[in-house]
Amino acid sequence: MQAVNYAQRFTKWVVDAFLNSYEMAAPDTSRFRCKRFESYDEEWLDYVSACRLGLPVEPFDIIEITMANVKL
Image (cartoon, rainbow, N blue to C red; front, side):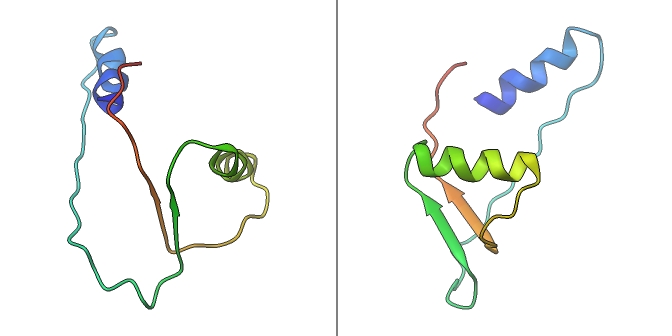
């Protein structure tokens, strides 16, 4: 839902908007460094903020976040 709302902003300026959707079968992740955030908590916010600021963060191959469908 969040992606749809974001894409609709572009249509207000008569610009094409695209939404890509990907599905991934549950792979064997034992050889990957994985991080799963269970909620939008302080740990998640610190990680995202550091990434956006270009600060060093613990490297992961796969990062997951549980996301509820909320209308923004």
